[in-house]
Image (cartoon, rainbow, N blue to C red; front, side):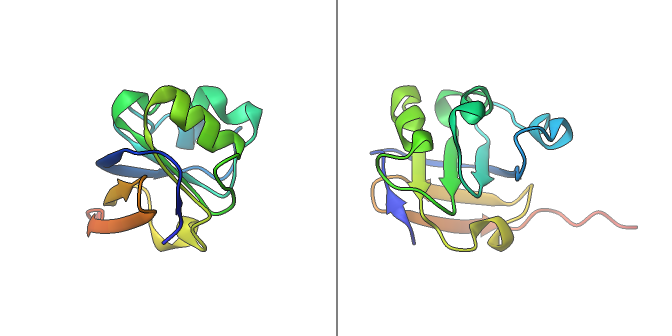
Length: 116
């Protein structure tokens, strides 16, 4: 559980991005993705925008007045802030539900494992 900062609920595939300069991770973001990161600042605005109007943002650090929360409200996307350990709890490709009203982030289905 975290702090819900928008009145939206969405389901989508996770993309974990820990560095706003990691173009390989950012390239995985598509409209409807759920961006999971530690925290955001103004350099993240174009990255958050990449999830489109059906995506979501989840962060480990932040609250209702954090930069990511403000951008999420402007975009009309689900956003949950202050979720301890979220960048380790979920991995890229997991299907989750983000409840921006109640602060819940729920695993629906783990990402498919690719054989080595």
